[in-house]
Image (tube, rainbow, N blue to C red; front, side):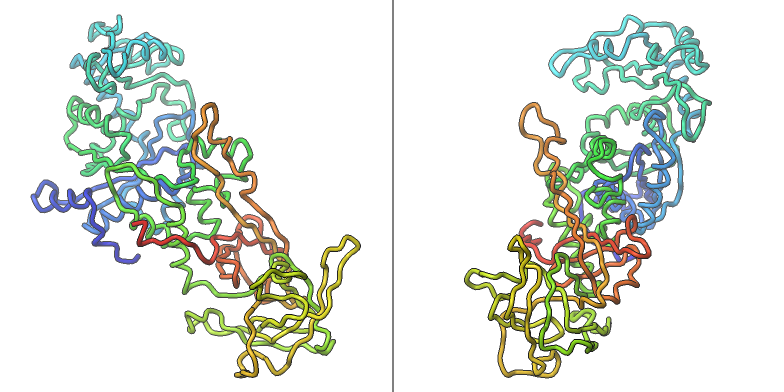
Length: 554
């Protein structure tokens, strides 16, 4: 992987100081996703941050699945997450599951009960919320808060044995119901859930809450820098309380950074799942989705995503990044890598009337003018070709330099042609145009007799191969603003346009995930889901140009 050192931010500076002072001999980070959905571009930022830090300072990064909620978790998501991390170019030092530590967590909870720091509560979830109070009013103590240690130990053991129904009892920490931090008002540590777990089966019917499990997991693994997003900043005192009161030998420290927010993009697994479940998209890997699998299928490269995540940096303050910045990095990555070829997305037939009917010639074309090492290819040319419908107008406006009756243009890699006749159907739609060509104007011959202002692309009608093109627009038109509306009200009904056109014959050897630059159309990726042996399907990754200026948006 490319060198990634030198990108300074406040967490990196903390790591440098901790190593310099001798606080830590080696840093250990972790990426701890819950396997309840697919990873998205926001997770990519956390992955890059954790793995890059460890790589730079010869540390370690663990992959740990926070699988404490069996109702929402599945092995499918576990495997998808592992695949995404590998695809991004990273490998973990240790692979763990929160469920690996369930026995240890239970024992630590028993320790809290014995110390008088936890109790079994019979209040319902709704009653617990009512008793908790507000930001301006202190909470009320539960009537079950002062149960004896013996009674709490007995009830907690019976909870584990499955003697109570879901929601009938919980284990809560005994901290401070008047704390200004609501997270310290006797938070729930364990709840009952008679649900089969993807990893432990039916061994357990009580499951730890995230705020209890997470610090214990970090401490067991010796994590030195537990990096999480800003919404967990108010949870840090509870994190420290759990580590201290559970008497963990290792003392991890939590640091918070601003999560990634992108314009016109949903960054919530719950909302993304809703888009999938409601059929707005064709799966978690739909190319319109901000999931890593969706970006991969659309055609984004690991390098472009890593470079994007490094560029946006790590900060403490909330901000929204323009999605065009992500597009900038895929253009930069593919500029010298992607072969350039011609494709016609909305075909219009052109008959070159003075070209011999049975003649066919092969024209030479560069695969990438900016990267001569990619060589050249041979493109067939004959009497009938396809051009883009947009490249012809019967009655054009001023400064329209493409094809119209009486006008001459250059065919890319080929000849000058001039339109002299227009064929229409019974409804007046143009279905074919007739042109003549000038054999003296062949590309590469050094012709200088006259110049034309327009150059258009084409494919040979006889040899071109049919292909499907999928063009994408943002899935979300706007953010939630109007009262009474949800993000689903802003789903773009025109986020996908499917076109049937043609590509050069040499493209039939293209494989899923191969990437190309189509002349004037943008960068495209061979779709791995819909492409078959007989049919090529291309996803447009990004258009060729943008008004976005990365220097102004740093």
